[in-house]
Image (cartoon, rainbow, N blue to C red; front, top):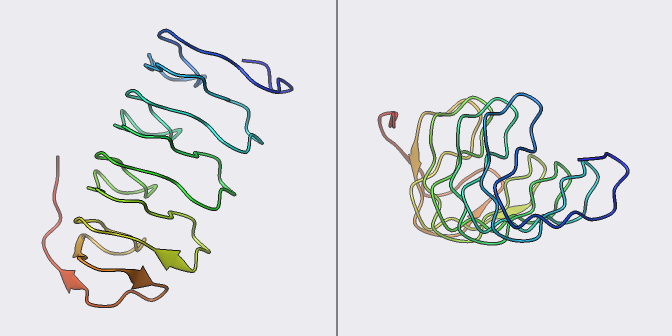
Length: 134
């Protein structure tokens, strides 16, 4: 896992976090911090302090990514426990548009929000419910 690597092909179990226990990757993935795209099709932890995240589709996990494709349960907040995402969503802090079709919390200070339509910027049609601990 050299930082200056252009691309890394991983087809088996690999740990790509210094402090992680194990990560499962079943497709080609670039684990460079400045990589443009990372292809993940198996269980993988994409947060430094997280335990495990489930990603079932191609996802870009670098901080300045424009779009992240999430089709499974994933935590996209540093301080959250678990978030449910079932559609394409942009999880950048400065993103203009977020597409959410499942229960997800997209605000740092919220517990949980129910979103069933396209949400832009300051969040429309939001219903705050109790925090879900999983």
